[in-house]
Length: 293
Image (tube, rainbow, N blue to C red):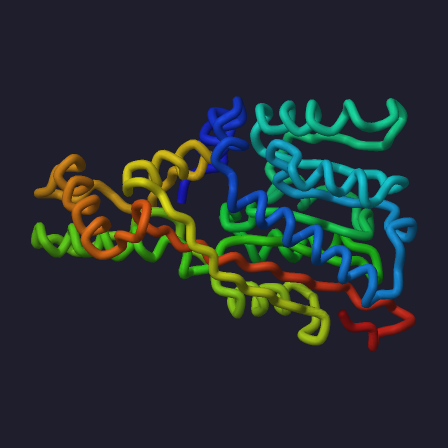
């Protein structure tokens, strides 16, 4: 997987406009989060006024942040991101609509390092949209986030499931086979909902306080190249594949494009599937351990 410095570079590059232009799925995931938080307030019989402190991980250009500041008007909000360019875009999006004394902090940092030293029991709510697939040590980071939540606190995050971009992976496998090569994985390997649940339990959350939602969404792009361009524009161009001996990169991609068009053409272009996962995990209230979502 790419290093945090490489991920930061990618998202800095896309923060100057191309991210918001292409981030249709991420906007959909932000709506998922907003809906989940609304349901959460109802089922917990709570109000936004009871949420005093919020951490947002991977705030990006502030799509989710802007919703949080409106929904929780008196909460202090800490928005964290690895890419300074993203933080600047988020702050620009949010600051203009808020009073000058509103407690909103924008912090440049890697959550995997930052969460290890942040003060315990600091937040009532931790939110993250389309970020956790980048974690290099997800289980350890979840343990840190569990420590940062107060009793009764909630972690809600969206991420991508393993079905995401299956068309691309199948097309690459076909291209490798056509050239007599062992197929390699291109792009990230995404964790399943069951995998996230297991890590959450191992991190100190209980089975009865974990909830999972899964949605398959299909986008259409004019060509496979347009699809890859959109992914790159969102800062998500990464690969676990090494350079294969005996086959050039250009030849590999030409054959992959042909396989993609042959197998996954639809009206208007080609399809690309996104598996959208949303996980909710609650820290039991010490006095009411039977609380559930």
